[in-house]
Amino acid sequence: MEWASLLQGIIISGFMGLVAGNFATSPIFRLPRKESLFGKDPYCGDCNAMLQPKDLFPVLSWLSTKGKCRYCGAPVPGAYTFAEGSIAILFVVFFLQYGFSETFMLLSFSSATLIALAMMLYIDNYFSDRTFGLLLALGAVYRTLTEATFYGFAGGVFAGLMIGGAIWKMSGKPMARDFSAFPPYIKLLTATGGLLVFPKFIAILPICAFAALIRDQKKWLPEYAIIGCAVAMLLIDM
Ligand SMILES: [Zn+2]
Image (cartoon, rainbow, N blue to C red; front, side, top):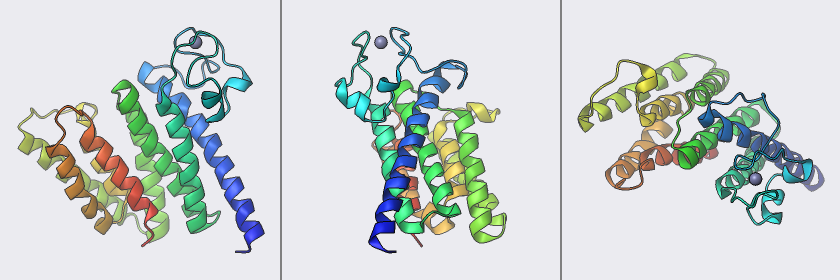
């Protein structure tokens, strides 16, 4: 690629990533609170002030008010801004690897979805089944498109479910019948198994197992490990 068109692509993909990241902060805040995604315009969760356009610039608004609400001074968690920034960076990296293609779109949105899941766990200790469903769907489309067969995705989901179930069994915690009551790490292993080609999926398991062993006080450490490794594996082209 010529440098001018490369630069143009970086700017466009970065802009798309900031828009996607900015949009993602809405479900990250609203899904744990069981709010409708489009029912209400953006507002401050502390004072309910409606946010103005100047409050909604990705990253910059947060920096300009030093991480506080402009209207009531309540701290705005930096995690929202982290989500915006990291999603923007991922869009640019996937553009550099794949240009503007279906792979770029699917990998960018899959990793944005993974980051949204991690942020909801981090900020609100909430695992969103709807977002998990979206991740499964993205994985199904991506694998079927790149492998021209559905079997890779289906096998990966099955492997993830089995491995997660085995870990659950070994942990000695009581099993649940209802999938919605399954621990988040099983759901994440299931979705990650669907998204990643098999060698990549196997490669992340030792790190996740290690995170499970050292979790101690950090409640969601295995979940963060699965998400972080999955994003890293999506970035590796093979
Ligand atoms: Zn406020």
